[in-house]
Length: 430
Ligand code: NAP
Ligand code: HSE
View 1 (tube, rainbow, N blue to C red):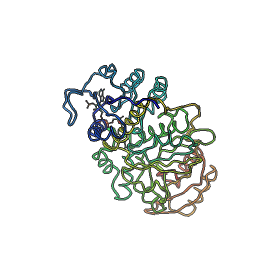
View 2 (view 1 turned 90 degrees about the vertical axis):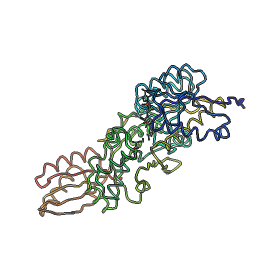
View 3 (view 1 turned 120 degrees about the vertical axis):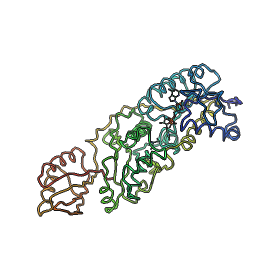
View 4 (view 1 turned 180 degrees about the vertical axis):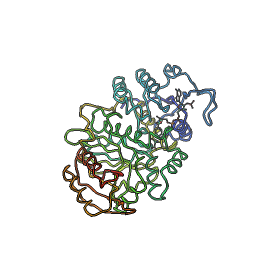
């Protein structure tokens, strides 16, 4: 067995904001426990910030720096914990750190979803650890399960609620009949939303997390650009009310699966039966539902964001790196993209759909619409007529599984009918 060395392992923290500040506090709190659990102490020797002269509550002034070279050139610092965010400077620092033989822990989903392959290659070449549990779904253990616990299985599908802001908004619109803008405002006040909440509500944040998970399970490069993105801004109170009456809830999910030799990677609202395990995931909670050939099904649920939950996942990674350093086995677990699988365009995917449309309230309208659907190879599973006011009826369809391109063509043709005033929404159904 390799000799156990290192009384203290020194690390540097890049960023002392929401997550970085939380991590610093957590390390202080766990200071006495860590040596018992790992066999040596953890020292945060330097903290990189933009303005080192600004006092930071709970952080020793002596460790603050705005000079990256002080960290890069410090041979004692073995671990760099990147919690500054952004994609250019963070990428440069991470690559520099890995090339200098320092191990890296990061929560930066934006960076990994865009430049993961380059960063993972640098870690491999330098035999360094790169750990990023907090980059997907905050405190929920999902990266390590996918990379290690499930490494002996073929994962066939992931469906996850991986954005707390949108799940909070949809929950409040459904349960409290709150307006979209009121719910978003509260999500921002509670600190769930990104600084630009468009990233949450347009599905971009979820797409970043999905891209990371997709490449881990399919061992092929899937980036943020590859993921189809549709947010929740088009979901109206009528959609929530009517789908609820039909026995569904609406959630924003990220889905990745392998079909016909291609990777599907998409983020969009979906209608889930009320008894589906993800349907009961409420407010800012995240959950990830995984299917594997051998393992069958598993679900991971918990806090997907916030200072201390995210710091908890980051510190877990740091302690794992410390174990590896002590045992001389760093670089043991790497991201291996040994396949080259194409990504399937959204119009080639197959789904069930819900259609809500406003139509003229007169005999024969349903037949006209059914003909157009049939002409476009679209089959009806269920149809119902709801509120009728001033000669306008709300017509709801559940559509049998069909290729997205046929659905798009059918909608286009239905819009051309005089009796169809509007197709108010089309939502995919699981
Ligand atoms: P944040 O509150 O904005 O903090 C960013 C920190 O980085 C600040 O301390 C800032 O320094 C420092 N920083 C930024 N640019 C810098 C630069 N050019 N040079 C030196 N320091 C710089 O961000 P956060 O919410 O903690 O997020 C950090 C990372 O964690 C991001 O990648 C984010 O996506 C990820 N993440 C966050 C959450 C969450 O719940 N917040 C959850 C999962 C993952 P100053 O203080 O001097 O400005
Ligand atoms: N804005 C993100 C969310 C934060 O709402 O889930 C965590 O990534």
